[in-house]
Image (cartoon, rainbow, N blue to C red; front, top):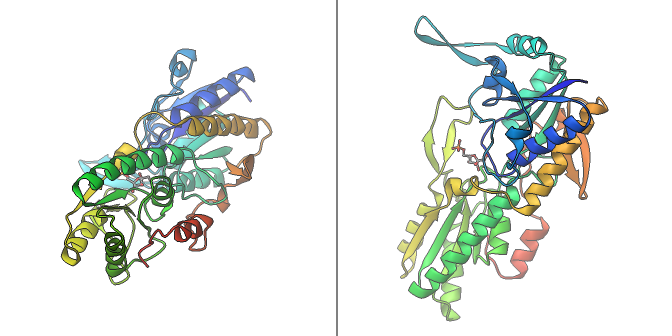
Length: 359
Ligand code: F6P
């Protein structure tokens, strides 16, 4: 094994650069050169890759984003090309294999979430050696206890809840924090517990407006004139629908979620004599420096992915199980998101502490 490549696909998240650095360092110590692929699969189709050297990876461990760039739009199997001024979609997967062969790249490390890893799996099915690394702030990938980026997102959401607490208390208001997570409630659940939220509203537990209002009334009766609620962007009222900010047809993830925080604040104001406000945390959860936990996990994943290549364990993904790094089959990871179980320990803990889940 002389040359490998690494790419980052899908939405960015804190820790991507820490993985790239670990991949580079481990590979170089084993005499392997590493190509960085620019902008996810787009760089593979368009042959936009460059040899990484020490200068590229120097100082990137704490840096947010990805030095390689990323995109969540480009799928080589359904790739947008312009012909005679019109957009047409083509299967460019053979071009990808050709570009990799031309550069004598023998294996590819793909760092991504479910969408990116599904494409990685399809390329692996064409016979190209691939190892995946689980990335997403949502923590919604199966077969691993943690995706890197999640811990940082939870820390940021927790800090936001701490800050909302003090202003909620001063003004005797209800503050609703809307966090990311797509159809999984992991960020809301963990930050809600860490940040002492009074209600945690997640997609896995459809909620009733009255239940959330009742929790606030109960607190008021006990003399607490303020409340803090954390709501996952994918949360759904039992009698209502998903909150969609926009439909983006050009994106593989056509549904852009958003708006549930505002809806909760509005509905509560109708039911309670208290001012209710909402804050959308948005991409603050994805930007900036990774926590120490995410740096460690990202580094372990990067090192383990290169080792998997050295041992020719392809069509796999590195994963965390019982705090050990293991390899799982890439085919077992794609297509079935890891959601919060209603019997999860943290839900039980929350209920035991009197936190409302809106059900
Ligand atoms: O999957 C990560 C994530 O940040 C989700 O939590 C969120 O719904 C989505 O990506 C937002 O993606 P974009 O930045 O493309 O709108």
